[in-house]
Image (cartoon, rainbow, N blue to C red; front, side, top):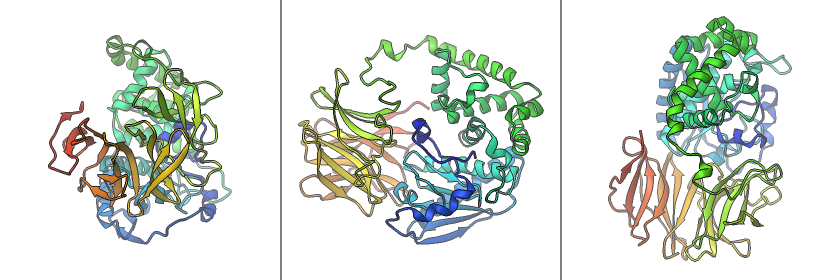
Length: 488
């Protein structure tokens, strides 16, 4: 893993798993604000020491099985056995993960996990679904193998080892390839867009932050494994891990130059993406851009929610440069009407859940419900849009995270997803009384709920069937029925 402190520039890097932080900085984590003290216990497996909160035994047991399964896969792929036991510190939610002293620096919500270099510890929160938790464990374990192959970590003040001198596309792209595999729709989307717009990077530009290393790196490693065999991945890592020179590793392990490798990768990418590009139309021909990237407003604008009358838009943006904030804009012109939050100077909100959540307008268009983190705990907030003030809050100290609230058509209730005990379920809160009702309670991930127009059913995304599917459930919590299948 290439160590660096998480930062807002480029902000797209926050949307993926974090890389580790330098060993010499690990001792300063004790200065973080901590709102709760974990009660850690240790679960030992053949290769791992799993540290977990005592209330999360079930998810820790499942995570241990995931970790051992990943160990077998990665060890075989890289032809290597770790030289010592692997610590894995598991937190019950992202807000609790952000308070960890195992690593230094701020851990924003865009950071899914960390593998630090000094003690080679993997630190991560339980994600919203078992599939994502499994992915993060695999991704971070690849980094542990990378550190182990290149050396035993490093002491303070010592010159960084080879793996720490390698570019992010090499390190992070490998971790994504080995934990996701060669066929990933998300990565394919990025590559198809780059090919269609003639923006596939040269070898020299792969290190440019405009080319997201997780996606472009994964795609390049998938090509290498398909063209030269998966054993080439391990050969390149062992060569580059000792030298810190990616181009030399390409020459040594593949018998070709870096430029030739990239040229052939470009040709292969254009070949498989060309039929899809020819059958689709660019977004500019099908939609109108409202909020457009400009130098003065930043690159990240997301989580939009349109008012019931279609005239206003609430969204999150990094246009303030120092943080992700909430804004209200004219939906036709994109003109900003108001900045709603100022998290840099207002300590009330630590995070606006900008990666995994979006808010929702009340049916009368006067209020806006959104989820956030305040003092280390999740909170459902209701904003008076015209006054720009939070007028009501629902705090849930027994839940790990709250996500994607949705107002009922009569404006009396709000449904949302909540993480608890390692699983994400659906809950309803009565806006007037604060009474809550749990709609689902199982190990499936239930996400992105939305009410039917008559308020009798709630549609949501779940992995309880094979793959993610859309499912309706009665607003009173009746039996589930499968609605439609997502593409496989």
